[in-house]
Structure formats: structure tokens, C-alpha cells
Length: 350
Image (cartoon, rainbow, N blue to C red; front, top):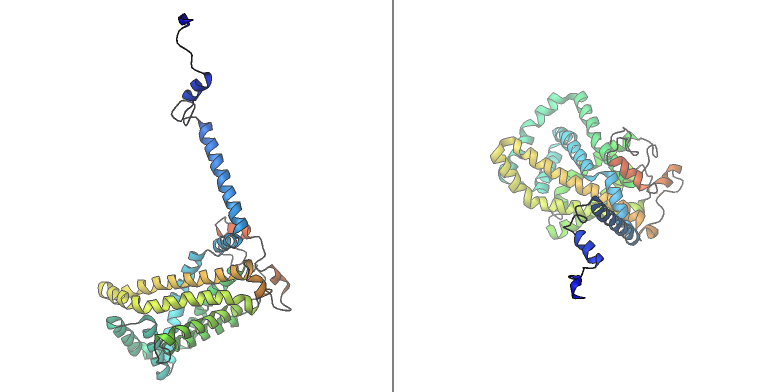
């Protein structure tokens, strides 16, 4: 049968040549890309389901961080500290006795490790303007500064409520808590110098003393600002994590801040240290927001939840049972910017 011509190629081989990746029926066809997209989407969904099954705490943490909006909360808190708490600090120094004022200056110098020009500016600022500030401010001005400083307390309270997912209306507003929190922090700032120096014995004692004192302070802060809604023991992981982060940043500031402040002061004048301090405050507040949020998830969604016990205090509000048990998807959607107010806010701000 030699006259039958060359053998014909199989139909499958011919169709494969036409539908290969570079052929007319391959990657150039929309159906080919649609199939690949659907396959990738299915794989991603399968990986997500596997991760949620094996690591539920990681899933809850990511959702809680979206609900809290860490960077936004940290920026707001840092701005409130800079705009309202620092003026209160100057007012406090102007009316405090000389011994307290000297201790406050020493503590600020110790916390930031100030040397050179930055330290000279601090000394000059407190020595030259204390009396003039006291004369100009007056009683009404002092009250306005104190009331404005409670914005820091309110910002911290919103952060704690979001981290613990306390629903709107789940706790009563108590302005006295904001004032108490500010006063305690002023006292703590005054005694920072002996704490950091380990009462004169050095950093080997100063670091653990600072860690313990910060843990106690953040433990109490959460309990106070949450209105006692959450029991003491579940608040401990967040206090420990926050205290650890703050201690590392404060100790590290003694090595970084002097050089940064002196450099910006030399290059930009008195405006330079403003940006340096504000940047440091944002980092510090981000660490606080992250520590409290992670601590809340650890106390609710990990194996520590059972040893730490129930979240609510005995005889607490009925709405407290909803703390941390609401649908996390709704919280994440609200914080992601869908146009609705966050359910944990009093003022309706996102």
C-alpha cells in the first residue's frame, strides 16, 4: 500500500498542537485563564480553611487586629499624647515644688538618655518658663489643660474596648476613671529615674524593676479603663506583653534618642526634636496597641483561656458575656472601612 501517501498523525496529537499554551486554543483563550483563576482561588480557600483549622488563634488574631486597626489607633493615641499630655506635663512642672520638678526633669532625661544640646534645652525650658507659664495659665486655663488631657485616657479606653470587643453600651461612662489614669501616669513618670537606674544599682536591676512596674501599671490600666468589666487574671497576658514591648523601647531609647534629638536639633532647630519625639511616640503606642490586642486574643482564643478562667467579673453586667464572643467577621468589616461606625465607639468614629 505504498501509494496511500504518508501516514496521518493521530487526531489527539493534532488537537494538542493546536491547543498548546502558545496555540490558538491555549493561553490565549479566556476559558483557559478562567480555569486557572478558579483553580488558584480554590487552592487559596483550601489553604485558608486548613490554617483556620490548625491555627485558629492566628485567624482570630488577624481579625482582631483588623478590628482594632493598630496603626490608626497608635497614631491617634500618639497625637493625643503629644497635643494634650505634654502640655499637662509642663503645667504640672510649673506648679510642682522644686524637688518634684527636679525629679521630673531627671526622669525625662533618664528615659530619653538626653545629653549635650538636647539636655541643655530641657534644662533651659523648665528653668526659664515655669513661673511665666504659671502666671499666664490661671485657674481656668489649667482646668482646660487637664480636661483636654483626658483625651489620652479616652483614646486608650477605646483601644482597650476594641481589643476586648466590648460592644457599644456594654459599659457605663465614668469620667473619673480618665482623670485617675492621667494622675497615676504623672506620678509614674516622676519616679522613672530611680526605677530605670535600679535605685542606683544599675541596669541589671533597673530592667527587671521597670518590667515589673510596667506590667502592674498596664494590668491596672486595662482593668480601670474597662470599668472592671473583665476579670483581673485574663488581663495579665496583655499586661505582660505590653510591658515587655514598652520596656524594650524605653531602654532602647536611651541609646537611640540622644543622637537623634541632638542631630535634628542641630539641623532643624527647635522644630527638629518635635518630629523625633512624635515618631517615637507612634512606635511606642503601636507597641501598646499590639500588646493589648494580642493579650486579649491569648486570653480568649488559646489554651490559656481555660486556666485564666471566665472573662467577666462575678455579678458583672449582662452584656459582658459578649466580650470577645461576637462574630469577628463583623468587627473586621466595620474596621476595614465599609462606611459604618465601629460598634465599640461611643462617638461613632471609625
